[in-house]
Length: 192
Image (cartoon, rainbow, N blue to C red; front, top):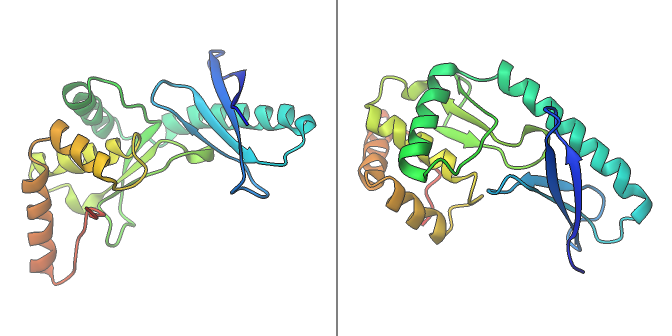
């Protein structure tokens, strides 16, 4: 079944294109995510009745409104400015996210990035790396920004990240060294 196209309005009254896709893997819940071009991909259960689509689109629009509020409340200005700079220099300004902030509750991870749903585009960076060299922190931010384009650590993820951020392997070595010294693995979610 081909994607169906709809438009909704976000919290700033901008039109947002929604590509609705019936997905046989979904049975009860729907999932949405923002695509690099700014549109949304809304995956719904394959047998979702057409009469329920309107209410679902209203729900997604409401979640977009909530994201706008969340961005202003859950954003660290210094980190956002740094991510904006990395995005411009390394990704041509093409990556979009909703919030980026420091958090102190990450145990083994250095960062995380959500994709889809009401928390779409929220990036969290562990405070334990605040004293690390700038080039390593920039790598962690670039890594999480790349997850906005690639949800997993595919070969495309790594090749694009290495091309955009040439110090990737050096930063990963630094992270492994810190983890080794501390007696606990600190991974940047590395699977190649």
